[in-house]
Image (cartoon, rainbow, N blue to C red):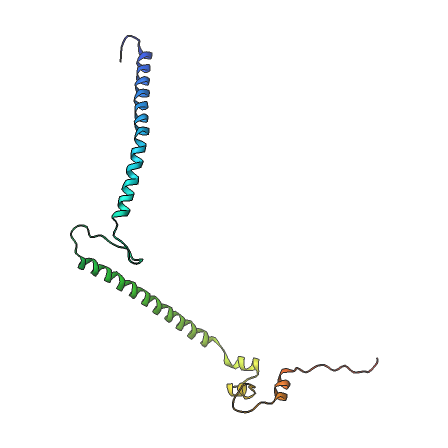
Length: 159
């Protein structure tokens, strides 16, 4: 920066230098975009091409570093056993909750009130008039008598 113009020229020199370097950086950025894009596409294509082939839905791992196939298989088997154990415990918890809830609800039912509501004292009373029972033949008149409801009769009396 020159000292012959004073503070205003120093400020202008600083602004020009900043604009010049910004312009260079911007041009360099835009010039590098196509090559950067091409490199990223090539990298992705190479990654896809170099992947081991999948024969099923399971993920395929590539051994890298200090490991062996036996260690990887052991880890896979341990994970599989944990999944099976987790599912089994979840099913067991569900069955226990179901058993507890059924047990609680059956304790709350008052069978004496139910028999009074429906007019049935025992299951044998309920099944005695079963038209679908194979114990005794049922005639058509019995079935028709059970299906029809009593109707109200209208009298011919005048008021």
